[in-house]
Length: 199
Image (cartoon, rainbow, N blue to C red; front, side):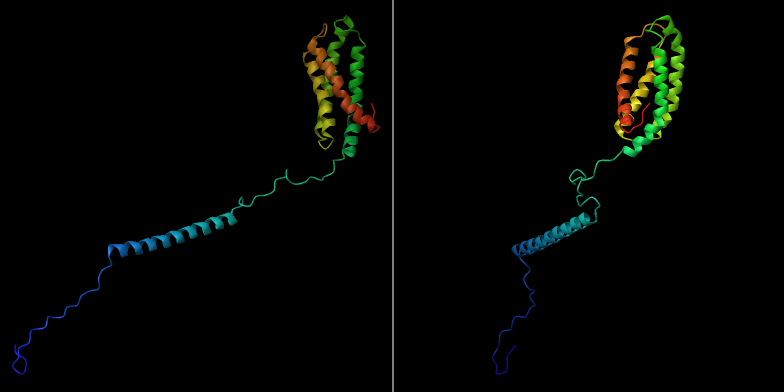
């Protein structure tokens, strides 16, 4: 091809559209690292927010002061009125128990003919007495715990005594129950006598 004027001109190389260079592997890894770092930061932030939210809504999250750490300034319970009511209720029953015990022990030493003859009556009187006093104890749960425990022990010892009592000399077991009942009986006796209720 000739240009005007007779001169030939070289053909120009056709213009090609060259796409921009693709990112190099180095550029790709830096960009990817930045994206991963941002994703990790967002995930961590979401996790922290989630834990804080759970902690706020959880009923067990906030520690509650235990009763042992709180100062106790309550005054001791006054059992006077409740004790007097129970004393008044058991006074005639305790008097019955004393009469039965005195009548039996006055017959003579264990194993004597008179004592042997009195064993069945003492057993039946004591069982009857236990059946009458136990409901009274059970219905006065507001009385002083020491008073109720010693009274119950007195009743239980008498009940155990007659459970195995037979004619003849007393066994060491019988004597132990008898002695323990006398010791336990000082609990209700002293409590009630201090309140002016006697038997």
